Length: 356
Ligand code: IPM
Ligand code: MN
Image (cartoon, rainbow, N blue to C red; front, top):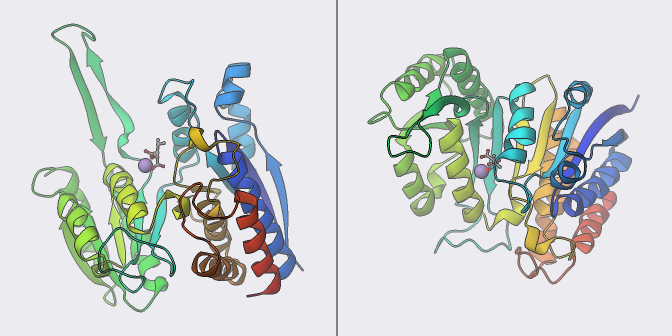
């Protein structure tokens, strides 16, 4: 019997709808080739919807999204809406309420893509960041006093729970074990300064490591990780870290792998509904021009298939993306591809249909 999945789609703001359309095109091609059935249910949330209706994300929608098999998101963020309103009200709220405690972000340099790192090629840049996605500085703990006065005080605390840290670390060990033969997991922290939070992370990491004797473990401070990601990216296989450091190092990772146009991510709760997205923003200045690169969104769709357990279809999308990057694009940047957004989607969907 063919597997069937209900996918909730939030195209969102800016170029989100354009790239999501290409991702769905590719998912339909993969479905036809692999005997999968998808039902896509669109949701209008984002800046335009907020401006028109005042609604950000109703409770009823969160309930419906919880029932989906997976969620596919374009981009959240609108130039006319105060920063934070949509990001916190939609993206972070979904991550938190659906308890998507892992943010999985592969950093892979494909053949044919230029990295700004001199002397580095695809053989040097192929690692995955496992970012904790529901705690840390993102938890919203803190407050302010005497705002706007000379005596103003602002406190923003990083929340790290044993349960939250342990499930993230455990996921990273499991992911590392099945990813490839390298089996190296690096904890990224700041144990020399954040002596409470990263003491908990380090102890948890060491304890869980005892259950994974086949995995080589390593530790580096976040500032050193930034240095090594540029100087020796080949040292990394899987990196596990907290929410804030993960946010920062994955933007660096996106640049190392050639740009936001190809960086994909998944907000994952194993066994529950997970949400997949290109990690770049809504790119307002390119909206509606048909020049944005849809590959990040297409790779996010591939990550969704992998997480749903559709490995063959996921690998097929990865091969089609690799071939397009190697042979068909002049560059990965918006407006520089030598192809339009939908032409790139057509090419990849075509390769997927042909089983290349
Ligand atoms: C990301 C983004 C978000 C984050 C923003 C938009 C809230 O930068 O997905 O990395 O900080 O997590
Ligand atoms: Mn970010």
